[in-house]
Length: 363
Image 1: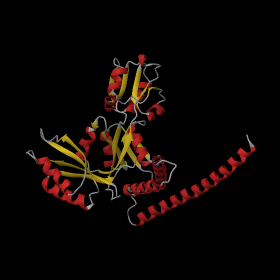
Image 2: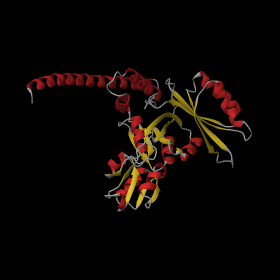
Image 3: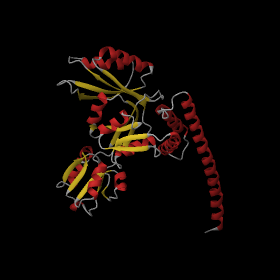
Image 4: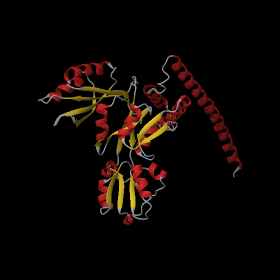
């Protein structure tokens, strides 16, 4: 190697080593401050609430605004989430329930939001995910609520009607679907396992590429990968995490019909989240069976200049042909405009349940 080149590289590498040392000291200093926060909370009887969604969101928004580059905001967000996750684990690793087994998109959402220091608790159904947190076996749940291609996740909406849990966060995850199989070519694939939502998200690709293959819905994409790994002529539609975990090659990549296929997850806990400055509020309401009833329920939001970001109808189940409406609005319930709108809505709606106010997803 050229001597001048070696000298130049040696100077830069010494600078990198010096920065690494500074980073190490600063990371440990931050961890010591996090421990002090835990000790202060314990003295004031709040040791059970070591995770504050609004505080984490404020940290992430601040570092994104301060970031001068060249690292992208997405990279900075990931790094600081992992730092906060590791600091929280010094007190007590958070237990996170999600739809398993390991290798699902739900695991990816849980890790994206809580970091790799969290204690992952995969469950066999969305019902079990709710129950684990309701019974205080897990600290938080991460459940899918809607997909940009296939719409709402019905079982999640049904369980939100009755659960005492609060929505305290959201995660937005870009979904890339892959065809995983030990077979060498598409011609050898006779059946395809996947979750029903993923089969629907890849419907047109399957029609074009595997029209004769049997499509078999299962409980999760990771379960589909498990089945495909042990069966000749089988394939699974799943993500990269399932491919890695179950050692299945990608026979075809990015086979989702919509290029911007995205799933939104919500984080559920037993406590409310405070205002972060960039929040959403979710609620469920019913409308009387009469002309103009829904318009009367929506007008308090427009009167208060509160923006609706989602309106989803769902059968009420207790009465035939009656519906409830799932609503997301911008702002925290403690913000004066949202508070005024909710107060008026409470006077008009036959049924109103506030699901929670929480920080908007940090992408």
